[in-house]
Amino acid sequence: KLDGTGPEVNVLVTAASGGVGQYAVQLLKLANAHITATCGARNIDLVRSLGADEVLDYKTPEGVALKSPSGRKYDVIIHCAHNIPWSTFSANLTPKGKVVNTTPGFGTLMSVAAKKISCSKKQLIPLFTSPKKENLDFLVKLVRDGKLKPIIDSKHPLSKAEDAWAKSIDGHATGKILVEP
Image 1 (tube, rainbow, N blue to C red):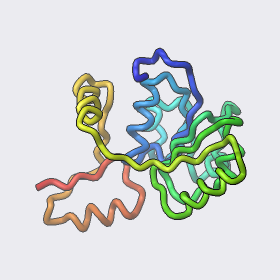
Image 2: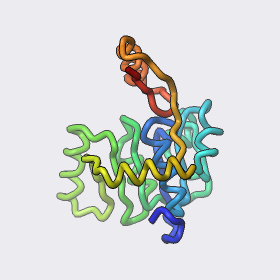
Image 3: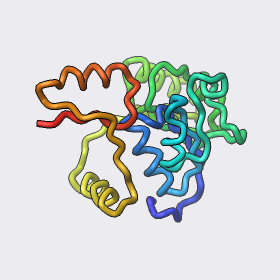
Image 4: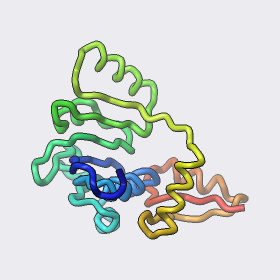
């Protein structure tokens, strides 16, 4: 529910200033979540302005450990980064916590299989999406109503698409990178 009437859940969003994380923070705030987020030091104020209750610099010891400053365990982790071991997630999850991996790869699928074999109540869920028109229309309405704010890192003409790709691969964009015709 994105109307703030649901029960409060504790959520961690990794890479919260990136193209996916920035939307996750805003949508979770609409859903009444208590949000802890990770990002680079230069983006802490931005991520707070999007709705994060606690923000960790991912390069600090606390950020690397994903520890909530208030000591909360996470019901859900929206994982938008790379190369964080399951043990780091597991140590910070509630007993039935879930990690939703927005960047799944082969290693994620292997971890999902291992979690099922071990009968752990903690879950790793790879996110594969197929956009539906009604969902995209709903997001557009949130933007028009001022409830969801797109953050644009940079704009590139189509003739310079390789520059946009290089910036994206670098992994340090703040928000979305646009390629325009």
